[in-house]
Length: 271
Image (cartoon, rainbow, N blue to C red; front, side):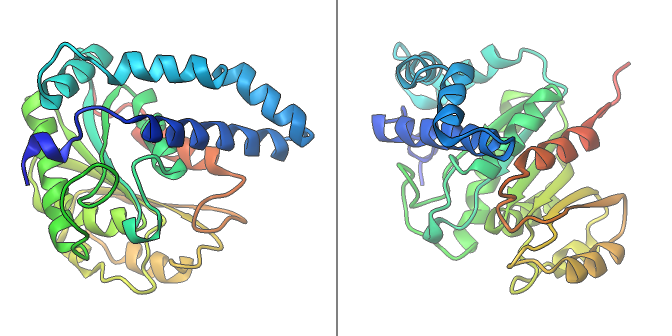
């Protein structure tokens, strides 16, 4: 799978619309949770984020660097522009593509936002066969190769910079395995780890620092089972349980961001 085709040349209008919908819907949900009526919640979301057209124009300016011939050049330019000297670089992997998972997922966006707030250069991408990415779903095998490509890209773009691999659900299962195997990756973040029916025994030999964030009512990752797994892992590890939420952290997604932000505070240490 060619790297230039793996990272699609520019987001199509449909992708932009999905990104906007996810961000605005998340803000509307938060406003409603705070007690606003639905109409007011949507108006306030537009006031905070801008009208759909304004936001779309900002995304176009960011993602459509039209004078480059290839997207690889576009992406390097965007990342250098975003942060010249990041403290770390991170890749965030999305949930299961056969069940609607894409890089535009709200949980993935929130994780990326939290990592960005701590001074990192953050990359989201679509697994093979998802969105505009080439190929077809490979049940985790080929997707590990996709994560390796993303890690290689970050390592080449930000040399001598520590790397972080984060993943939500399916992306957690796939991404953390790659992160454990790659010496350039120093920290791992597992979100909504689907421990009920996925094999995470590979973590038993991984001594890298790990953060797990899980909803107390996660239907795919029983908290008791994840606690037992986490307690038996080597190295630094932390489990944060967000009370009263399901797999998607509905209604408390900001607590996911807070957990990541707090864990990443002060890392890596600067001279």
